[in-house]
Length: 257
Length: 261
Image 1 (tube, one colour):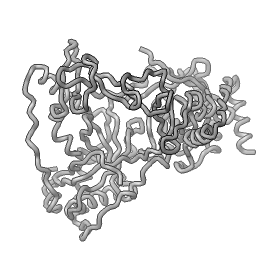
Image 2 (tube, one colour):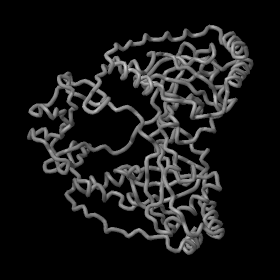
Image 3 (spheres, chains in turn yellow, red):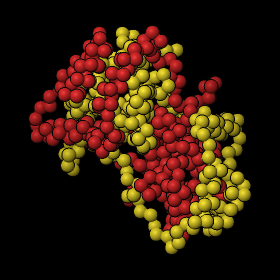
Image 4 (cartoon, chains in turn brown, red):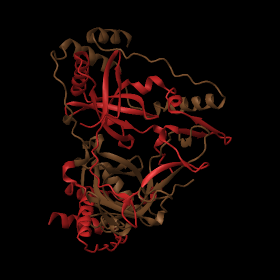
């Protein structure tokens, strides 16, 4: 089945324009549950209740969006006004510049989409793909999607172009904000050597297909047991083992590896 | 101090480090509430039993799973927690990989991983792992369960701490085969690629994440200020989509000339 595109528009850099279609590249495969009333499994409804008029739920057409500018003082915004914050409702995706694709830390990547070529100008898509591949660069641009402007990175991924929405630097926590307690004794050279040997011993090429979410199966096993009326016992609490003797633990780990 | 989202043990060989997980993302978004239009009271979401039409307290909510033959199986949180008990408490490091070998398509959510508790043994084990990771370009690959979902994760050193990035599972990344791409016929001429490469070179700079700011939030704040003063908000017109270019080579040449001038 051909996938459905979720946005159509044009990438613009310099005077070159590349008409594209955007497709979702990812999907969640988590086992989904719905909320039910525990005693009889009946359906749970989420109702909007106004604390001042709690007798009956508030209909959707009686709801407006508001932002609290000061205590109990709300500014109401219509959907159109909210959309105005996105800037122009553009069908353009403007590329501002190009960066070395390998320099971007994992934290910045938010969500991935595939870009498809539009029938009318596949040559422009092919050109951008070829040039990005040769330069090993990624295009950085701005994209308005779902009424929100995002910074995006476009790079090659096999035969397609991939688009990543990016997190803003100001939205990322600097890990150093979390304080690390002082230690009386720093890790000894011998410990570092042994831990490094353990890291080397566990080194492997990354093959994403080699890892599967076994938890989905585990959850479905519990569901099946419950459906069959079996008693589901919680497992005994395990005491986590401390790392009192680091050196001994490292030695034993290396011997096991 | 932010609250930890998960706590447990980071297990590396036979070394166990008690750790707590914190979000690596700060929520700086403006949050809107749903208001009752007539008097601007924020509405609350309440859970009701659809059959009995009565409000149901949170403790009486369970998870329902519909089987393939339309049978509803009801599970409590305690029952669900029996699915993979070890993995709900332990991040097991299975391997070490090169960070660059993990395609960004897999990156999901960033977290900061901190030692839990002041015990000297814990702190030293954390520092040991940190120091070893700082010396190598490698990241640890591990898995654990948080809030009824299992995550594959990449753990590495960043800014003097261990950070964890959850990864999507391989089957959560859709195949790109069905995405329309150019055919051999569309293959650009070498001189076109040369020109495009020259244009990219001219527009290149190092990746500097600090130069990008959330102009959406900024504009939203302006709009709120204007609205609070009773001013009207202008709705911007739609930009024109650029027309497809008939002559790629000419567009490249003109773009290059513009950049260089």
